[in-house]
Length: 572
Image 1 (cartoon, rainbow, N blue to C red):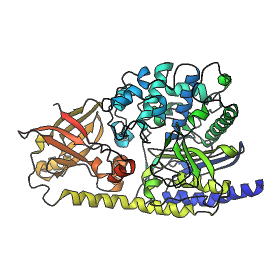
Image 2 (tube, rainbow, N blue to C red; image 1 turned 30 degrees about the vertical axis):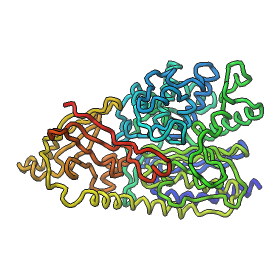
Image 3 (spheres, rainbow, N blue to C red; image 1 turned 90 degrees about the horizontal axis):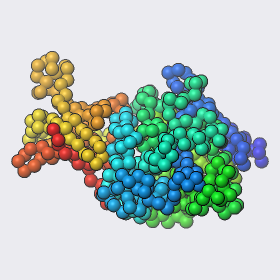
Image 4 (cartoon, rainbow, N blue to C red; image 1 turned 120 degrees about the vertical axis):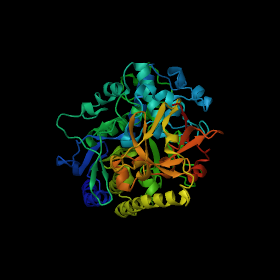
């Protein structure tokens, strides 16, 4: 049996390579734990293409949203120590978490609500993160900004994944401990578990240099080296994704989590009141039965009887499930996602996924057999996610699931679909613009100025863009197709061309151009338009920027209200 299992896992290496190459990802690192023992490790490709450094099981990658499980575990530790409570509202610790657009959230939302994505506040990541994944804010302002998000659905009414709420949880940890969340995780989790290559800032990268670099894959398959993500311990939204780790360390984490969870389940401990006089006092990871329990169903109206839910930093799926990889980029690229294990006994996985800048992660645990799968990769999400499909391929072999699904074909389909996004965007851009877009063009000088949204602490500066070539020709006003440029909070911005009327656009010239301009998270028409507004006298008074880009099908799926574009008032 053991030999057959190892043979099945080893047989996946060719398929792993096919999936990785289909997405153009420079490297992947994988590992499998079963019955508490590491039984399989595999890596291929280059973690650092320029240096020719090959990936292995000790290569450090950002694990992005897999950070959330560490954050909820840290909360459980601080609850046991009496520094936090699951029952008190977050505003008890952070009075600035007032949520003026839905005061009920500020008054009532607990750490459980934030960690289970139950606030109903719209997940507008782009109020914090801009072009080239640069952060607009420091960590000190993130709570006030998150509290000014508009509601998309009712408080505790449904699951609405929101990274900014984990930024608030990280700030809560910092407030009660007097240290950054990363420092607390290092002392309470990483060091006790021997996770010596797990860090929360590139400043702590291991001296051996075995660290993955992030890349975007251009249309013809060449690689674009990306800047180091600014997200790290102490920054805005650090609680949502600052952890960087390795396959070996993540397998160690998985083993510790499942062993502690099993012990707590046996004692019927871990539920709700983790007081310091309970038998869990000497445990490194208390409260895992509580944090890994189902809190919110992730879908509404799902006819499947299988569980698809979210706990606190953990997804929960009963396989077979079409919702594996729920937050993976593949989920939006595949109209019919793969469903593994259709003819196999049901199996619970408690897992998470991650995507940030030029990095992807898939992390599965299987408590019934004390098994885990970790796959880490170093490409950006717009072409799709190899880690998602590789993890499912390993899952099939680990549990001998039937019938076997060809995950390689889904990799090809996802990448083919990704290539259709750019031409569809251009077609939409043209159709929405209309034929007489420039017939009533107002003077460019009308739009120059400073625009602010105080609640979200965002400031847009619109200035003339004097292209040097046009300036030398002496007629730049007539010939420059992008006569304006804008920046946000002093960070790198984009050049603007007139779209129609008082609407301006920064549509790039191609998908490759978008990636080179750091615009991967803005390849969506509403995100690419600045709509200036006038008063009754015809004077520009502000602008509207849709930083969310909500789709009409999302309104139906989530029974949501439309989130209006962000309003900026002209102040200078």
